[in-house]
Length: 300
Image (cartoon, rainbow, N blue to C red; front, side, top):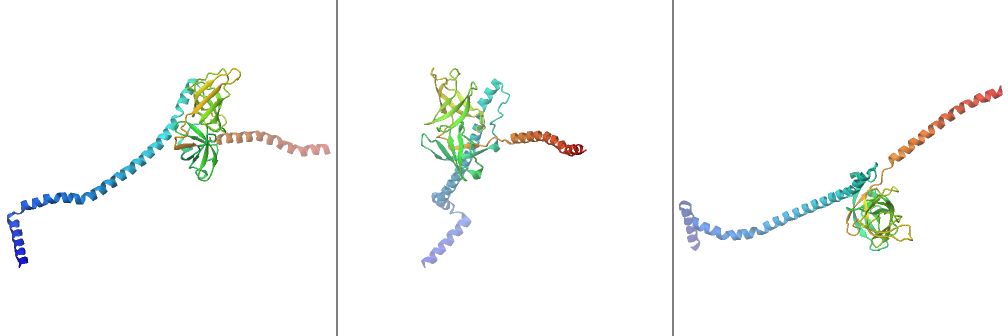
């Protein structure tokens, strides 16, 4: 009985609302009351979409940041020779920058996977090895200057001896005066510039750059900065201390420079040998032809 009454009442209310719109205010009140509940119900969905968007944006920013850092490292490495080129222009050197120029095909980026904390055995391990084309005596630089050179390689890694290691030496020149010398590692992140005469013009703050002598290190890259100059009358050479310009213990990414190409030298040497051998063959050939004639004349 109650069900029938409720059913009749519901039909009556629906008909009255349909024809007379008397339930509009009630429906509006109900929708207003349900609006906060709908917002709460959809909050997890909005939260998930927001977090997914932020995560995607964060990954995109990280990739862009990594790419920009790599490009910045390459640009800084190329800018290292600007000061050297300016000094070369002032000195009017004819062979300006012919050694040590870097192009995109001659470098590869590597990460440092291990630092040696021994002050007397200073080296780093890189994540590039023989399978990446890394060879011994390749130069390693960071965004500021030369760090060292490759001394050992494995298929997947390599070891670079730092310029501050006691077993490391590099030919350098003073950027301001072009005075040449040998920079030797002393351990404890220190170096010493040797074979600079007593009367040479050297002062604290002078930049030491690679001279390119020996063919191992390209010329024109910053290596160290003079930190102390001592003159002793009993010594014909100055005692000069220097500090590395490269951030040996703070750098995480480095550049491995390719070796200087020697194909032109080998081709020149081969052509010279062929030119030297050609006259000899021309001289020997008539001698072989003339021998039978000399024998015939002797027989006669």
